[in-house]
Length: 298
Image (tube, rainbow, N blue to C red):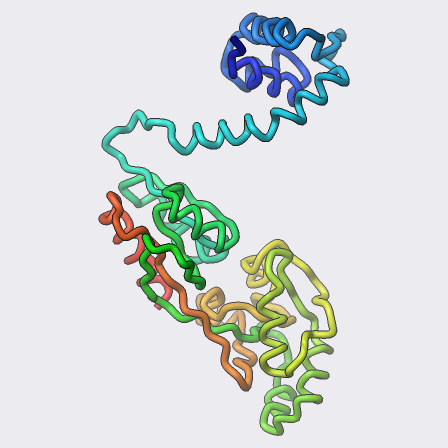
């Protein structure tokens, strides 16, 4: 009967290119790696690697087998990480889903002080909702609600989508234009500025532009950076503008490094919710996380 560890060892050899590398990544002996490989080759009936002096080179059949089993092995390894029994029996572990910027702004600095273990997952909100319902996550921070009957949503904050500018950006002309409410000239001024955008989320800019000007933006940001935290750092103390949630820049605005340029003629607000299952064994830990968010985002 085939042993699933043979496939894990085969995958490790394929990805590291050597028996030694596979042994180190799996924390087993090199003879054990050789035994797994020879057993798997005997089972499938053909060679999976050509052995050279420097590395293990996959055969064509080896490549086919790798492509077939790689995703399944990764899913099994992920399940192993999620459900492995911790040796620290008295220390609970909770899994929380949120966007990267929310984590960085609120929870990141508190992690070393928490009396329990935390696993943070970043992803799309529909996926987080499904993971919360299935038990993979214990709590999520979300602006979206799902139709899952077993979930509760507690509103705790309203984020406002606004235009921010670096402290050195000259804004007197723009402020005068706002008084005229001349949409054409306001658009022209905005498009003439240096714009920052995030590679992960351009929806804020598109939504703000559509709600205030009745159309999609017909320009692209000058600089696309990894995330909204990067935008804040680029704007801080300099020039340029961006459309992002206002709470992300609270510290920089308090110190005068970033200025609020415009909230729009039509305000855009998103309600953020704590999403949890109706019955959770981690109610105490979840309450501690909620208290941190409520303190940091007010």
